[in-house]
Length: 377
Ligand SMILES: C[S@@+](CC[C@H](N)C(=O)[O-])C[C@H]1O[C@@H](n2cnc3c(N)ncnc32)[C@H](O)[C@@H]1O
Image (cartoon, rainbow, N blue to C red; front, side, top):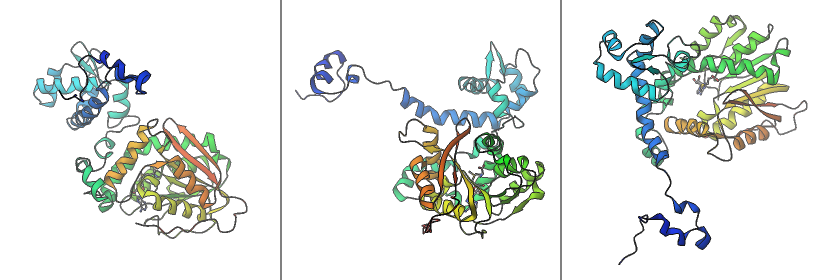
């Protein structure tokens, strides 16, 4: 009779093959749970449940309902002109995601839904959720991307379509992050800093710094078609008159040497891949005056890739949907900064889960620093 390689029906019998006898781990006693596999399978469903609820206007409709016992699925179905059983099923799934509450038959918004899922929520992600993963078809063709080294539909082909809703959706969080960063880097102590914001999006960093420094001025860069978001946000926050908008590719847009007190690279390295990110760090170094500081904000991957899965998956999102993007490890980021000539590297976490390296250009830059890597794109 052949020996089966499948699990023994009575795992206890495997004791003779465990660590004590042959050095194999004790998990042999008991098979591992399938829960991590199910969590992955259900990930697709979870995302689409939320997308459908947003598309159908569930959260806005619940917000309009009177506070109290909540709204039944039948009432809500009447209001939204949807079949009640289907809607109830969807609502229960959103409850299972902990993004709605159900008390008896009444559905109502919880605090997370109010803050993140209402279009006018305090930190609304309603516009961000559909676009944040990048073009959805790229995920279904991920194996092809790994095979060929290029996504089917890179966002580089139409950057504005991806980045405009993205930077609108992330603005509030990044602006709060940039404002809180002052507690760690005291940019508000500078009377009239010159700021350079490369790939600024809605310019959350420039806005926070200009609001804190009455005499500050910012050069705000982004691609044509995206830079209008910065124009709008800076105007809405009352600082547009202190901004110079400089549209163009941040790898080639002309920059003054030794002119800036702060250069911001906010969540741009992850889209560029190692060569492109290194090049941006070098451009930042050249643009700074001695003792000027660079801010490199990103989701940095630690040495144990499990401890910050969000960073790993944000990197994967870039690999799945950009021509060059990859996750950024702490080792890579500090390497680019040190190689460029920066010193006094510090990692700050202005708000939860938002990290940034702050580093200084030396008072007397060492000769040969500033780098001149050739960027492969
Ligand atoms: C993830 S967003 C970050 C926006 C902003 N810095 C922030 O921290 O919220 C990346 C930004 O980089 C811009 N970007 C991407 N490639 C660029 C390029 N080659 N030149 C200039 N900007 C670029 C995008 O348009 C987008 O606004």
